[in-house]
Amino acid sequence: MDKFASDTRCHTNPQVSCGNCRLNSICLPISLHIDDIDKLDDIIQRSRPLQKGDYLYRANDEFVSVFAVRSGTVKAINITNDGQEQVTGFYLPGEIVGMDGLATNRHTNSAIALETTAVCEIPFTRLEELSIKIPSLQRHFFQLMSKEITSDQQLITLLSKNSAEERVAALLVSISSRNQRRQLSSTAFRLPMSRADIGNYLGLTVETVSRVLSRFQKQGVLTVDKKEIEIVELGKLQAVANPIGF
Amino acid sequence: MDKFASDTRCHTNPQVSCGNCRLNSICLPISLHIDDIDKLDDIIQRSRPLQKGDYLYRANDEFVSVFAVRSGTVKAINITNDGQEQVTGFYLPGEIVGMDGLATNRHTNSAIALETTAVCEIPFTRLEELSIKIPSLQRHFFQLMSKEITSDQQLITLLSKNSAEERVAALLVSISSRNQRRQLSSTAFRLPMSRADIGNYLGLTVETVSRVLSRFQKQGVLTVDKKEIEIVELGKLQAVANPIGF
DNA sequence: CGTTTCCTTGACTTTTATCAAGCGACGTGG
DNA sequence: CCACGTCGCTTGATAAAAGTCAAGGAAACG
Image 1 (tube, rainbow over the protein chains, first blue to last red):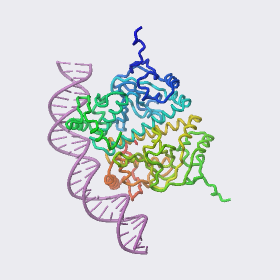
Image 2: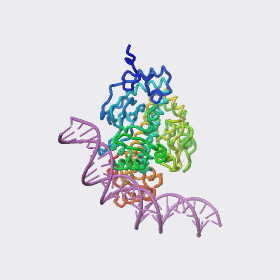
Image 3: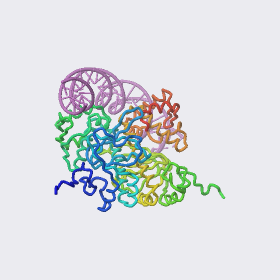
Image 4: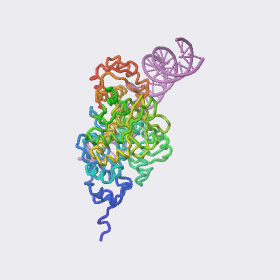
């Protein structure tokens, strides 16, 4: 028998279950008992991967589900009244996106895949029901939302108080540590988003982002090759980002 | 019998219950049945008013409760690694503050009264228990958190995309509409916070805030007398703030 | 293989911050 | 009750940071 026939290790494989998922130690199942994980598993829908540019949901869509990113990257954007877009977050594997829809039962953000991306869709009403049966899940979900709040507030602080260099450094450090959490390299990675998205997220123009990256490279803090980043002096980068934490 | 002896209408009166509270149509009790309100009422603690400058809680305090503002105003601040403070929100009567503590069981913000302020303290573990018994309360609390997220994201957009004038206009319009919700004047009110707090919140210096207000006054959009604001042309102010919504 | 998109770099402009000064309200202690 | 110091606010002059405009090159894409 082919030992890979029912392989559940690959995180793009739709057959994978929460119990087997490589990301379960950082995703929703965290802190659940093994049989509770199965219950969670039952309500989760795994669809085929999204292509770059595909929408996970659009602003004003009815709020039905939240989504756990399985692989790839998602950006969340708000559209302003005058039609510009504002990137409010990047979501990497193991992170949950879509909680913006709860307040009004409609999404206020849109979520877009930045590359080929697989997600687990979690219907919210069923998650709510399950939360009532599994208090630790309720608590965990409250915590996820609260974490979203604190991370938004860190971004607010960043935008309000920090220079272009500090903002870019903070984003790189953030991605670095989120990679580390997923057991990936914290010093060498590919940026999944464009310079325009970075600038948009950080409240800077593309030109400024580009200049800051060039400056960091000139200073020997990192090397940039298109989207490939290698952080040479993580400590120095953290020091620049430090005032904030992020 | 003195008809005011057991008056529960005054919002600084510690005896008031959710059922009688002037704010119950915009506060936590919203959407609860009358007997559910009583259950909520049972867990709420009403303490004596805070004085200007008093802390409701401090960053790193254990997370025990969330707080509904009954009267007065509260600001929430983050302290950055280098000791500066960042105002992340102003909370007016009927609004809930303190949800930042959920993620880690410790508050990441501090909350400070900007004037004499009365609050209802809602112990979170008891709210959680009650949420399990009253699903509409669970839903409502999820919604409150989600609303916090969307309002933070609007602030992010504001900080990221908008000029000083647009930011100040947006704050004024926001306060105006929150006043309206509480059946107060939407065009004449006293700013409960200092120029420094406004600037801090909006990512501007005191000087810039002051200049923008002067400019608005010169343009006849509003009149400023110290902290008293009268909005003369609300439409024009909304138009300036418009790109965002906020 | 041509076209489009993304990124970088340079020159210049604009916005807001910084520095400095002064005014008026407020509160405290003499 | 007044004098004084502090604090909060305003206004002006100047500086710095980031934005805008423009151009060119490299990679991606059909």
